[in-house]
Length: 49
Image (cartoon, rainbow, N blue to C red; front, side, top):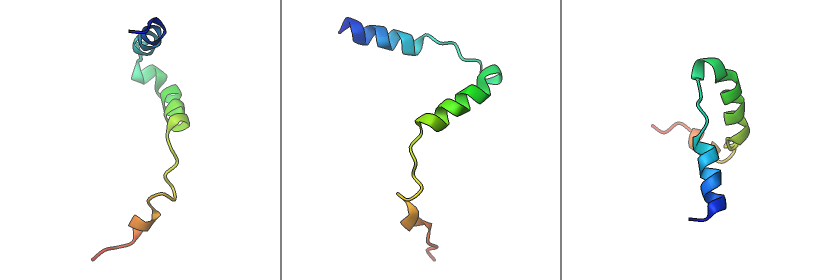
């Protein structure tokens, strides 16, 4: 395995996250990295009977 890739994987797996303490920070990161799907699935908003 590539040593650089191994280092990146080790950094990504190392943090210990406490949801109660870091909730606001985690939600900010999730909203930053999430994709905008506002118009992508707009055609599915119609009612189907």
